[in-house]
Length: 331
Image 1 (cartoon, rainbow, N blue to C red):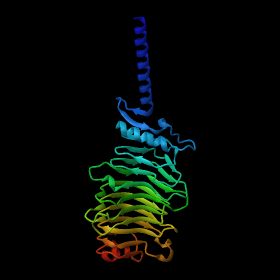
Image 2: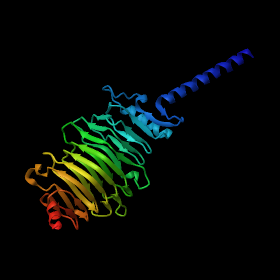
Image 3: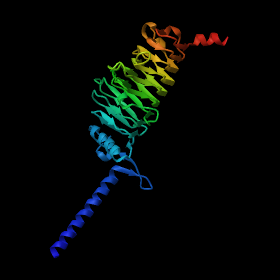
């Protein structure tokens, strides 16, 4: 009888210790609100540092996975720290990745940095390419996720830099290439992109099944700044179905041309709209056209300060407003 009581007593102690350990572990990795609700997951509690030269890829991914599995939904990288990424991240559905305003994610290697799934989002911070071998995408969205109007996917207040001097890779890449794949009605707000081969790329490929469609339509790019890119905005698709990029709205553009710039805007698809300023177009060698409406373009519009000699229009019913035309119309 005594032995049985002792066994029960020891088992109870083990259970209590285990529960205390679990509570402590949960408390360490999750920051709680005042009312006891789980607010966010801190990557530092999964082993990320941000103050050393250690690869933080695994720790950040584990924090994302934990936030996804527990439905907490938010992961934070805090402070004026520089985290190191040597392997790509999958930002899982329903997870918000939030950086501190000056938090950096230094990307070392050649790989797709962040694959954004449906209902995921990124806000704040600096994503910096420091490896001259990088030739992939920093932020990537794939139409296989079927992004649509009721989803909560968004990218906001993010800076994408390639400081390696290579002018390689793509800052923001939207791709739809299979039957029934699409990216629609996603908001990209207050994004700064500099030093890449391609700043923003929208790419809709023709599906192998000719009866199916792929499309990238109706996305909003608000207050987008592009600087020192070889190709600033590249929209690559057919004029219409089966693979189209149409109705995308670029509003509040600020584009700084450099000696490396070859194309500012290349447009296929229909009804895409561009409004903003393009600085120092004269820097481009030979004063070649830096804006091209391709033969697969229709009813696209450009409202800018750029003069017509910098524009090549191979498409149908495209519209662009130039300073000289505005002056003539005002008389």
